[in-house]
Image (cartoon, rainbow, N blue to C red; front, top):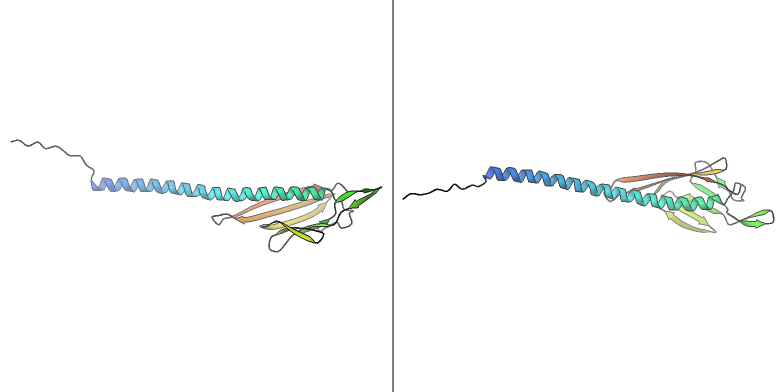
Amino acid sequence: MSRTHRQQRAFTLIEVIVVAAIFSLAMLSVVQVLMASQRNYNDYTVGTELRDRARAILDRMEGELRETGVDCPDFTVVNGTSTVTFNQCTGFDGADVTWGAPIAYSRTAQGTLMRSQNGTSRILANSVSSLSFGLENGYITIDITFTKNSANGRSITQSFASKVFLRNG
């Protein structure tokens, strides 16, 4: 009687281990790419939030400062300081300009941007790492920097500068 031997094909243990190691390295690479993408997304999100907040704040400050002048009764800006005080023009009484109540913008030691008027202070923003006002040739300069940590602990900093022409001065 003759026996026929079929040759069986199978993977050896070494081949299985090599394939598993290669597959593990490939998966590790994919996970690393995904984690890096998530970190970058978190940083981008914080940066976008800071830019949006800064734009809104600068728009408000610019609009109010545009309505003042160096000859308003409470106009105070010292170059390089983090406080400005001014009045807005509210109209005219004959040839005289009428001015509203003093408005002040300032940064606290804790990094909070405040707006004060008529004894009422309002928080406009937190995470303000620096704020500086200046006056040159009828323009008020504003330099503001925001710093905030992203979800992955990286510090994101955004700086902005603006020049506002004083219409009533």
